[in-house]
Length: 220
Image 1: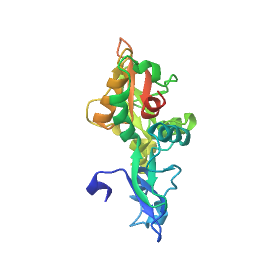
Image 2 (image 1 turned 90 degrees about the vertical axis):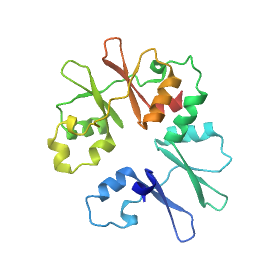
Image 3 (image 1 turned 180 degrees about the vertical axis):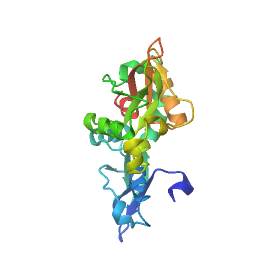
Image 4 (image 1 turned 60 degrees about the vertical axis):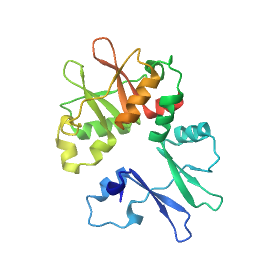
């Protein structure tokens, strides 16, 4: 269903039609290593339930606080009627943000990088240690190679994750990026159009200084 409809989340309901949980990309990636798992084996709880009339800013605050990437919209009977994802909110931000706001103002200050020759297992341990979902990948000269996400890593078999270099996990398409003085609105537009969760912020020499994530944009 997720492949057919090109979605990353599916809401799971119980016999009464109420929200029971969610199936996300990470759960399905893990499930791919099993043989036809049941929904109950891969379901995740949903932390953010909102009413249809909830202000967008309230939804954003709850998503940022919960570290979840979607909110489920429910009616007064707790029946799901839709979802609001980080991608949806970035689409709004790309229109609503003030054009004078700079990407460097919102970007995460601590730039944790990994080398393209490091293993996927090393990248995953760095993400866990620093509570990150994305890492900037650089070459031996510190220049940008790409961005790796936890989803890129967990899609592979455990043996591949521990032994293969990070370059194996990077997407083949050109890396989306912004520079220090880029408009935050432009950055949000680029993030939304390319459907990526983070953009590296480069200095005048092409070296990554920070990383701008969807959460950073929502906080702005």
